[in-house]
Image 1 (cartoon, one colour):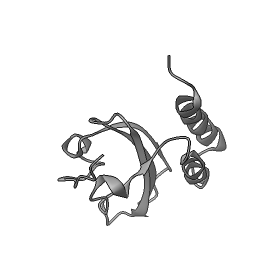
Image 2 (cartoon, helix red, strand yellow):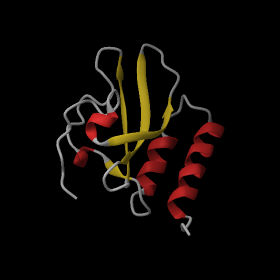
Image 3 (cartoon, rainbow, N blue to C red):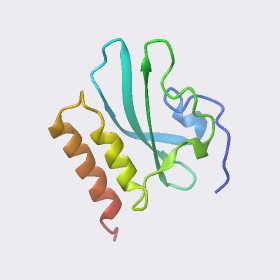
Image 4 (cartoon, helix red, strand yellow):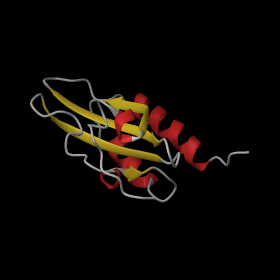
Length: 112
């Protein structure tokens, strides 16, 4: 898979990056943001994720410039994904657990 450059911000314009945003978990904002996004690549259908946080000044994911800036969401990388979700302390433990369980099922359950 070629490491293509993005012509837009994948948060605001995922379609211009060849992506579809499929899920998101976000801490309750307080003049700041902390969010984790799951995208699907339109060409390869692979899943990717990234987490970004900051004050109200920067735009979310403004430093994501190419596909390789995102992390593949698969069995190999699931532990890092889980740790990132668990680090979101301003999201309820129940919501974090539900989000992790949802993606664990999608990643580890064989498709027919």
